[in-house]
Image (cartoon, rainbow, N blue to C red; front, top):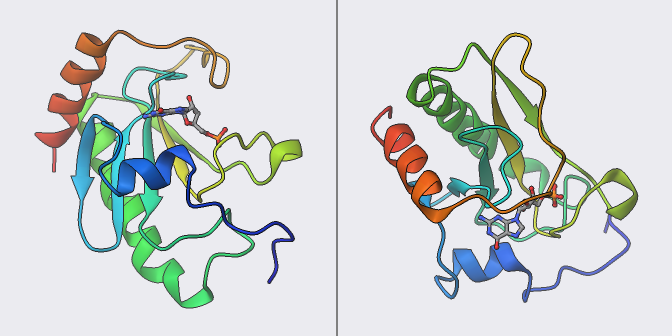
Length: 142
Ligand code: 5GP
């Protein structure tokens, strides 16, 4: 085990994966689910979450990266197109000291525009109507 803490199946993203909590989903297949971050750092901020359970990058199975990163790329393309973004920032926070707050591996896909700063990480909750509208734009871009 490369990550010292055990995986906890009661984390928020595991609950979303099991359908126990709602999310504004934009993509789902057998490998990954992608949904909007409820506290977006930029409009259309999307989280890509593998169905394989791991706390983070260090304990994710080595043979899972190919399929999973393929989904990150697929979702990133739809986020950029759907939000009409000029660029993207793709981020992953590892461990509490690294800024991680939900301990099921995920990648952040953040739409970017020239000269527009990101909002603070996990700061303020967006209105459901706004998340719904952005999810519809991204879904339509696959
Ligand atoms: P981390 O800090 O672990 O890299 O990122 C966790 C992200 O999950 C944060 O950006 C935070 O805004 C987001 N988040 C926290 N709770 C929920 C939730 O219940 N639903 C969704 N969709 N996102 C959440």
